[in-house]
Image (cartoon, rainbow, N blue to C red):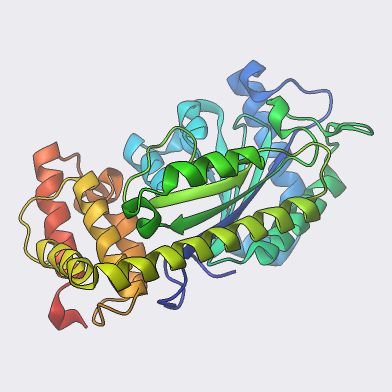
Amino acid sequence: MDNWITACDNKGDLVISSRMRLARNLAKIPFPRKLNVEKSRNLIKNVENAFYTLPEIQEKFKTQYLWEKNNNERQLYFEKHLISKNLIDNSDKTAFILNDKETVSIMINEEDHIRIQCITAGLNLEEAYNVSDKIDDLLEENLDYAFDEKLGYLTACPTNVGTGLRVSVMLHLPALSLNNQMNGLLNALAQVGMTVRGLYGEGSKVVGNIYQISNQITLGRSEEEILSNLKAIVIQVINEEKISRESLMKKYRYELEDRVYRALGVLRSAVLLDSNECLKLLSDVRLGVEMGIIKDVNKVALNNLLINIQPAAIQKQYNRNLSRGERDFNRAKLVRKELAIDNK
């Protein structure tokens, strides 16, 4: 699988990433919130023993113990979409197994004992699912999963019971937002069992016109049905966004081009940028790149900036905690450097 941040540039692709999450629990063991630190860490060892069975796995994967990380390091993993907020909140007894490409993350002692996550670039649901399924099979060979013949895999949250599969696709949908069509779309998606969230999933606000569409129902449907249903809906949403973009270009070409180039101009010259303003401006630039208006910016740079402008990522570069003003100053400095004309 390709890392979604550094994957080859495809200007016309409106899908930023595809992600699979499989929720699994071990039989006859309380859910993580009921486990103390000692039992939680013993469970981590059991999962490691079940996973690190082949030399190639030992070479490509490494366990990250969150109790050994500082707050900024933990937050950076979250900003890169490698772990959840829940894993950070219980860092004294949580860990995750990460591969060298940062496309596979196996979270241990999150809401469930095991959360297998695979994330890749573009609309590649099948590829992400196949990788997560192989890891699931490997673990199931060596662990006793909590499973019911009628209900399927048993999970801490009832909404995950069944397949335990959560599929999500991250899309850039600025035209639907500009044309005030998002509310209607959100209602339509809710009626067909889909949920829509922001850049960082559950609990996050939509900023920069980036939306995550995922399935709500896991019980009573097979993995194949969940994948095919979500893919069909995503393709339909993409088509609606493209129609909306064509309408904007036809009716407001000069206004659209002005908006795009103004955003690029601000990003290339601003001295201070807060994260929300920066994400909104990056959305306008991304729209310009996707529509072929802007020629000298690539989407790999824009994907990198989605992560690198976040608070923990900025502080990582300077290896110290920064005030909000310092972050805004260094964020603008980073963006100016990344989007500088002489870099292209």
